[in-house]
Image (cartoon, rainbow, N blue to C red; front, side, top):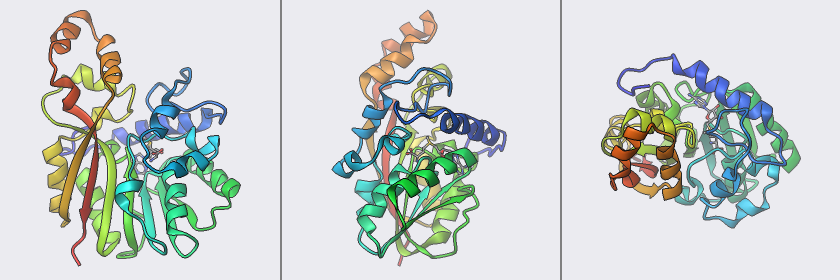
Length: 279
Ligand SMILES: C[S@@+](CC[C@H](N)C(=O)[O-])C[C@H]1O[C@@H](n2cnc3c(N)ncnc32)[C@H](O)[C@@H]1O
C-alpha cells in the first residue's frame, strides 16, 4: 500500500472491509473500524466520540455515533461558518457531515463522498432520520471526486486518505474542487519514524488504516505538491493502551524488541492537518 507506487489492489479490500462493517452494524452497539467486521463489539464508540471537542456529538443518535470510524476531530480545525459548502472525503455513516451541517446551518450545504454502497445506504438512512436537508451523500472515489471545480469552501476528512492507493491524486482532486482560499481540515493516521511492518499491521486492528499510513514528511509533500499553502500538522498520540495492546499480539521476540522502544508511542499518531488553497 505504498503511496509512491499507487496500486489499485487495495481498493476492493477496503471497500469489502467497510461494506461488511456497514452491513453488520446494529445501532445498539458500536462498530469497530478496525477489528474484523464480524468480531465482537468494543468500547470503540466512546473512545472515538471522546476525540471530538464539540459537545454537538452528544446530540447525535446511536445510529450515527456507533458507526463513527474516525481517528480524530476534523470539525474543530475546520472552523466552519454559516452558509459554507463542506465536502467530507470518505463520509462513512455520516458523523462528520451531520456535525458540519449543524455548524453551516440551513444556508450551508454538506456533501459526503464514499465509495462503499452499503456505507452510503446507512448514511442516507441517518440523513432521513435526522431530517438533515442540507446534507447529501454521493457514491464516488476520493481520487475522482463527483464534485464540480472550485465549488467547496472547506474539505474535511476523518481517517480515510491513508486508505487511498493514490494519495497525491486525492490532494490534487481536493485542490481542484476547493474555491480559491478554501480550507482543508483532515484527521488521519501518520507515521513518523521507523515502525516494523508487524507493528503496523497489528495496530491496523485498531485503526484499519495504520498499514497504509504515510510518513509525515511524505504526507506534507503530497499536500504541498498539489498547490496548498499554510500547511500545519499537529500530532494527536494514540492512547498508550492501544499501542500496548498492538504490541501484545506480536510474537515474543518482536514484542521484546519493540516494547523497549519508548519512541514507539510517538511514531504512529492521528494527525490534525490543515492547509489552504491560495486566494
Ligand atoms: C475509517 S472509515 C471513516 C468513515 C468516516 N470518515 C468516519 O469518521 O466515521 C473509512 C471510510 O472511507 C471510505 N473510503 C475508503 N477509501 C475510499 C476511497 N478511496 N474513496 C472513497 N471512499 C473511501 C470507506 O468506504 C469508509 O466508509
